[in-house]
View (cartoon, rainbow, N blue to C red):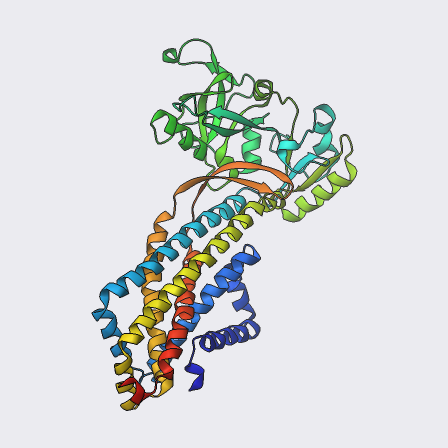
Length: 484
């Protein structure tokens, strides 16, 4: 029974069972593989959490079949109830640490979901040769529009028009309405100049909410409402995340069709709201390319997005365009790959979370150790009586070790419950790749099963480490010496 002395061998058994399943049942590996993506660091966190939970489940199984039946669990439960104040404080520490960890992981998971939802497998994103981001690209005009004619594989619509979105991407510095002018509080607004909004919407797979309309691709502007004065306003289609963000300036949940806002030297009027939740387009405003380019000093295309039949076609078209199109030379790649590169920021956030989590874990481990050592010092005579009654050392060890795990389990479950309240919250962040550039985005935080597994497993891991040393100390007590 020596293998029951510590919890790690229990988890090791579960790991061996998992490896056996992995090799024995090929379908099993595909079922659990999504638990270990995206990113190596994310997978390690989730794997550690699942492993710790597996160890606890094995303990419960052993108790059910009678292997641990003689361990005095009822004695530990009664002591936890009697010392309820210390129990509550210790469990609260687990709750705080796990709750914070779940919220932070939900933020990173929201960023992953955002980048995953932005690229379409059949799209090819074309930038100027040498450009690492849309912000630094300059495709010019004229000859670049020959691209879909010279490179086979680009889809056409029912009217024979190539499904190509010609775009000019800009970032505009906008003062926040109502902010103190002395503080100079500002925000970055992403403006995407579009030549044909209907084709661009089709290429990116985006529609408008009912009641909205695409801006006029010919005029791109319309008269202001009478109550807003004279003159024309630039027509704009907003991502729903940006509409919510700008709505706060006017005391509204979100801007709606017909609302007017200031951006740059002109007033803008909302003609439609994109169904863009879960993508980077959620934080953009689309307008006529020639108008937006003149307003913000960027008159050439920065990006072309080509629609192809599928992912394999996208890869082929991207390679063909990069290798053979030279007027001007371009750098083409599948759109999915471009947005995957923006996960650099996500990994940085994840490493920062792990760094903070380590320090929180150290505090949690020492807190559990203090609690368990205090419990043992108050119950030395009880331990002696249990030994005299016939309980062997390994059962004393298992008793106090599982008492620590129970505190961690209760605190971890409550922490996960509190942290899960952050699901659906909105937050602002910046996505960037390793080569610079990036996008300011509004994202929704995501709490899923993997996040909860990582949080609960982290709690159990702290409980196991913090409870092991005190449990070993209790095991070494000699019956007669403890009764003195």
